[in-house]
Length: 531
Picture 1 (cartoon, rainbow, N blue to C red):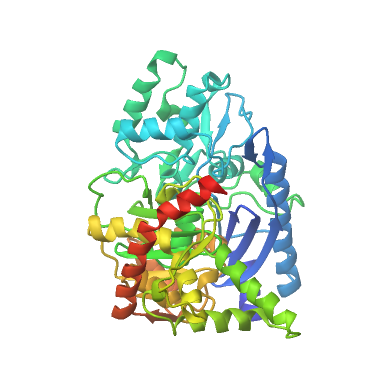
Picture 2 (picture 1 turned 60 degrees about the vertical axis):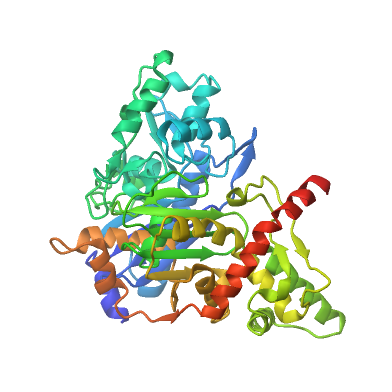
C-alpha cells in the first residue's frame, strides 16, 4: 500500500478534513478510497473570561497551524514525502455560538461559544415568535440577546458567523456555510434549503425600531449544500494554514460543516429514517425525518443533514459520568482487597452483569444528573440512587439501572418523536464510550428506542474524517450521485457493522423503568432544593 499512497499524495488525489472540537483540533488526510492515511491533532481548552466561555483568535490560529504541521510531519514520517498540494479541503467545528465582525472585518466581541447559557430571554421570545424551537446556543439567540442587552457593538455588525464559517472565510475569502452548520445559526426552510425567509422577515420587524444599518439577511453567510463548490484556498489562506509556506494556493474547499453533520457522515446516517446516537459524557440522538414535525417542542432541536434534510436532535447533558463513578468505586473496593484490576475487564464484567438483571431493573431507580438536564426541566442536578424495601437489590439490577438511567433523559425526548409524532427509524448507529463493551450498551439502546442498533468496527476518526469525506465527495462524486449513495457505495461498502434487534422483554422492561423514572423526578427536584 505504501507506494500507492505516496503516489496519491504526490498526485494530490487526497482530501483533508480538519475539525475543531471543544478540547481537540484534529486533522485527517484521506486517500481516493476515503481511508485515513495521516493525521495530526492539537489539544486546546476554552477559557472563561468575563462570564463568557470563549477561545481567542490566537488560540484558533495557533491551534489550526499546529494540527496541520503535525499532519505534515506524519505524512513525511510515513511516506517520506513533503505535503505541498491536496485534492480538496474541508473544515468543521462545534456548532452554534457567536462571532461578529465590523466592516473592517475586525472581531467586535470575544467569540461566544455554544457552551454559554446567557440567552434565555432571547431563546424564549424567538421560539414564541417563530413557533420553532430556538435553543440558547444558536447564533440567532446570541444576536437577539445582544440586542435585548443593548450591547454597543450591535449597530456595527457587518458579518455574523460560526467558528467553522470564520475559518473558511479567512482561508477562501468567502462567507459561506454548509446547510447543516447553517441550521444551527437560524432555522432552515426545507423546501428552499436556505434560511427561512418568513422568519428572517419576522426578525427584521422585531428589531425595526432599533434602526440598525443592517438587515438580517445581509449579515448571514450564504448557505451551500454538500458537494457544492465553496471557493478555493487563497495565497493568503495557504500561508495562514501552512506557516512553512509550502502549501499551494488554489485548492478547492467544500462547504464548512458543523460537528453534528460530520457525525452523521462518519456514521453513515444522512438518509431519511436513519439516525445515530453518540453516548459518552453527554448523549445525543439525531434522527433524519421524512417530514416536518406537527409542532415545536422544547426538548427537540431541529437541524439538517449536510444535504438539507430535516433532522430531529435530542441532546442530554448527562450520560456515563455517574456510571463511571460507580465503576471506580468497585475498583477501589477491589484494590482494598489487594486485587489490581484492569479497567477494561472491570467495565466489561460489570456491564455484562447488567444483562443478568430483571428486565425492569427489579424496581430500582437512579438519576445520573451531574449537571442540569434541559429535557426533564432541571437547571442543576444531583446524582441519586433510590430503592424501596421491596426492590430486588443485587449487583445485576444495580448495574442495569445505571445503564438504563444513562439513557433515561434521552428516552424521554425520543418518546416524543416515536410515540407522539409517529417518527420511524429503520437503522440507528451507536458510537462513543457507552458501546465499548460489546453488546451491552447497544442492546440497552435498542430496547430504549425499540429500533435495531448497529455499531461499526471503525467508529473511524470521527468528525475530522467526516469532513474529509465531504471534501472528497465534492471532488470525486459522479454526475447526479447523491451523498447517501456516495457513502453507501464508496465509503462504507466494505465496513463491518454488528446489528442488534430490540429484545421485546427488554423493550417492555425499559418502558416500565421510564414510568418509574418520570414519577421519581419529584425526588430529584427535592434533592436539588435540599442539598
